Length: 305
Ligand SMILES: NC(=O)c1ccc[n+]([C@@H]2O[C@H](COP(=O)([O-])OP(=O)(O)OC[C@H]3O[C@@H](n4cnc5c(N)ncnc54)[C@H](OP(=O)(O)O)[C@@H]3O)[C@@H](O)[C@H]2O)c1
Image (cartoon, protein in one colour):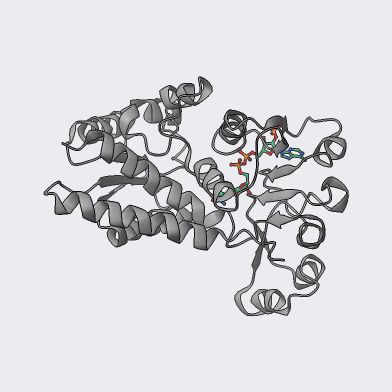
C-alpha cells in the first residue's frame, strides 16, 4: 500500500487549478492577480525563497514584483513602501520575507499590511478570524497541510490530532484548522512533560519542532497519519546512514553535495509505523508555496472588479 503523501504532486494540482482559474478571469477581460514580494537585506535563503515565489507567480500568469531593499533601510521607509503597496489596485498580495534585519520592528511591519492583502496570514486581524472560526487569509504552511490531508481523504472528525510545536506560523494556526474540522486537538511544546504519552495516542501526528529526527518509534501510534513539517540538514554521512539505512541515494547526496534533509521524525519509524506520512523533502515543503498562491488568488477574487 502506498503510504507516502506526495506534497509535490498535491502542490502541482493546486497550482494547475489556480492557473486555469486565472486564465478564465483574464479571458473575461480582468487583470491578472498581483503579488508584491518585499526582500530586505542579503539573506541567501530569503533570496532563494523570494525567487521561487516570483517564478511560481510567472508560471501561473500572475503579475509579480520583487522589491529589494538595502539591509539598513529605515523603519519609516518600510512603512511608506507598505502603505504604497496597500493602495495599489493591481497588487492583491503583499509578502514581507522574514526574517527582517534586527533594527526593524517585525510586528509593526506585519501589522501595517492591509489584512485583505496579507497573503502570509500573519496579520493579527487574520489570526483573529482564524480564532473565531472565520478563516480568510491563513498562514501558508498550515493551509497547504490541510489541503494535503484533504487530498488523501484523512478523516479528522472525532480523531485525536497532536501537534508538536506552537509557533505562530505552523503549530498554532494548524491546531485551530484541525479543531475547526472537529479533530480533538492537543498542542505540545518544549515544556510538555509527557510528550511520548501524548503523541503515542495520536491518530494524526504533526511534528513542527525543528528538531532533527526527534520523534521516533515510541512516539508514534501504529497506523497513525504523520505530517513531518521539520526541515533539518544532515551533513554527516554516518548520521545519514542511521537516518536512512536503506537509502543509499541519501548517503551519496551527503558525499557529493555535502548534505541531505531530514524532518523532525526519525524516517524508519515513520515508514514502519505510520499508515500515511509526508517525506522530507517532497512532503510539506512544496505546499507552503501552494498555500501562498491560494491566498493570493483568494485575495484577488475578493478584490477584482
Ligand atoms: N515545510 C515547510 O514549508 C516549513 C514551513 C515552516 C517551517 N518549517 C520547519 O518546521 C520546523 C518548525 O518551524 P517553526 O517555525 O514552527 O519553528 P519554531 O518557531 O522554532 O517553533 C518550534 C516549536 O517546537 C517546539 N519544540 C522545540 N523543541 C521541542 C521538544 N523537545 N519537544 C516538544 N516541542 C518542542 C517549541 O516549543 P516552545 O514554544 O516551548 O519553544 C516551538 O513551539 C522547522 O524545522 C522549520 O524549518 C517548514
